Length: 285
Ligand code: AMP
Image 1 (cartoon, rainbow, N blue to C red):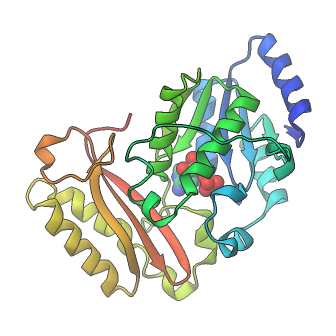
Image 2 (cartoon, rainbow, N blue to C red):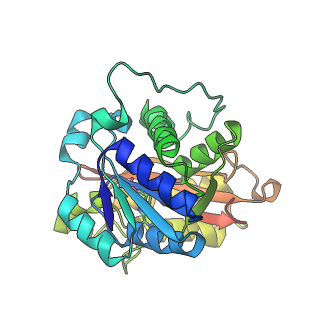
C-alpha cells in the first residue's frame, strides 16, 4: 500500500498508473475507519483495480469547533485496517495541502433545495464545506469511480448533483449502510456513545423499519409523528425525521406520487448526534 501526504507526489503516482491503463476507484473518508468504510473499499474493488482512500478531517464541514476537536483520530489503526482490506493507495494530506493559503476553492453551484432541508437546516455551511472538499479531492485524484455510503444520504445526493452540474467525468457508486447486529448504523461517532445510551439507540433503526412497513397504510405525517414519539420516549432527542423523495428530497405527502422514497433522521443520543436513513420505496440512483 502506498501512502501519500503531498498532492504532487500523489499526482505523479496516479498519472503513472493511469498511463499504464489502471482504473481508479476513490473512497473519501475522515478516518476513524470501521467496517462500513472498509465495505466501500471492497465495493471499490468490484469497479476498479486500484482502490484509493483518502483520510482527511475537513475542518470546513464542521459547524462546531467542539465536534471537530473531539472527532476521533486513529491514523495508525486506519492504515493498518486499509492495508488488511487490500487498499492500494492512501492519501492523507494536511489542511494546507488541500487548501493552500491564498487560494479560493469556493464553488458556485445551483443546489436548489437540496442543501437547505434536513441536515442543511441544522448544520449551516456543512454541505458547502463538504462539496468543496469532495470537488478538491476529485480534482486532485481524477478517479474513474467515486464510492460513497448510503449512510449519508443527503451528502451523496448533493455530490451526485454536483457531478452532473459540473460534468465531472467520474461515476458515483453508492454502497449500502453497514449496521451493528442491533441495527445501529456504524459510525465513527458511535465511539463516543456512553454504554447506557448505547443500549437505547437501536430504536432509530426500529422506527425507520416501522415507517417502511406502514408507508402505504398510514399517512407520512402520522407515521413520522409516531416515530418521533417512540424515539423521544427512549430518552433521545429527534432533531428531524422526514419522509422525502429520494431524488429531490422534497417532503412526501402522498407516497403514490413518488417512485423513490427515503426516510431520513438525525437524533441526539446524549452529546452525540446520529444520522440514519432507510429507503422505503423504489431504489437509489
Ligand atoms: P466518514 O468518514 O464517516 O465521513 O464517511 C466516509 C464514507 O463512508 C462516506 O461516504 C459515508 O457515507 C460512508 N459510511 C459511513 N458510515 C457508513 C456505514 N455504516 N456503512 C457504509 N458506509 C458508511
